Amino acid sequence: MYAPAQALIAELEAEAAATRRVLERVPADRLEWRPHPKSMTLGQLAHHVATIPGRVTSMARGDGFDASTAKFLPDQPESAASLLPDLEASVAGARQFLSELTEDTAGAPWHMRKGDQPVFTVPRIGVVRTVALNHWYHHRGQLLVYLRLLDVPVPVVYGRSADENPFA
Figure (cartoon, rainbow, N blue to C red):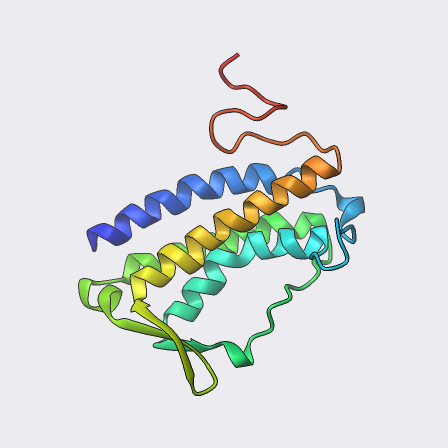
């Protein structure tokens, strides 16, 4: 297996475990809540967090993406119970994509454009790093803030949280 992809699979698996802990805390009766009118609902954000790895790696299979055709507002999930199965499917899809990468396919150029306008070009593996993984962590952090605002105990992601201390 292509070594950089193997390293990303290990990171994906470790981060999926942390993401599971966060998604398990999403209160089923608050999916419509949002902290601000411009913000996603809790359900939309949680669904987005659950599906980012698989959606982005599916997109990365091609040579690029046209942002003018994108629907950037995530779907509202039917229930909080659907979040973990969505995460598992998403992680499985990302793992499969990464396991298939070769040095050539990982390094091939991938283009983001908006209609005829180029936005950026990066190696395909760069899309995984920035748009799949870093983007995932960013939105998981937002989700943790939503949980705090709802007085839901925040799980450990790295180290400890104000509500949990695995070192105590």
